Each structure stands twice: as structure tokens, then as C-alpha cells.
Image 1 (cartoon, rainbow, N blue to C red):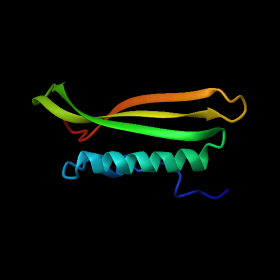
Image 2: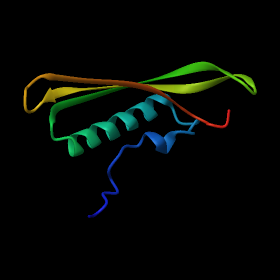
Image 3: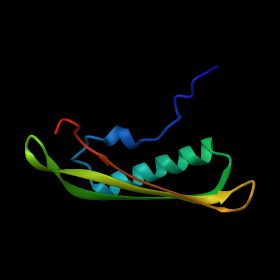
Length: 99
């Protein structure tokens, strides 16, 4: 069995990046996810990916409040076998884990 080093996406490459413009990060993540789904998920066709990046202020036990980036991701397409619409939504935070 061989390991495919390209499997996955680029999300965690910029997890701690606070300097790059959010629009640039959003496009990089969007393109990375689109490439990965198209390459590794043959059960879905006509794939579209949408990524939104928001700043969320959270309460922290140690330092009071802090701001993290929240990724809101939507993947849509058609299931090849049944021609049904496919929609996947996920949302999660990125950023420093230390606070």
C-alpha cells in the first residue's frame, strides 16, 4: 500500500497565519478543498465549494476574551449513482490553541 502525500487539503497550513489577507486565505482553502473533493471523491460530480471566514470573539478561562477565525464551509454537488443533490456544511475554529 502506498501513501498519497497529496491527500487532504490546505486548511491547516494557515491555521496560525494572522498576516495574510482573509480573502487570499479563503481562496486558497476553497481551491484546495475543491481539488481534493474532485480528485478523491468520485461519487460526487459538479462539485462546488464555498468558504466564509469570520472573526469570532470567544470567552477564555485564562485571559478573558480572544478572537479566533471561524471557517464556514459548504460543499455541494450531485451524487453520481442517484443524481440527488449533495450538500455538506461544516463550521469550525482555527487559530492558536494555547488560549
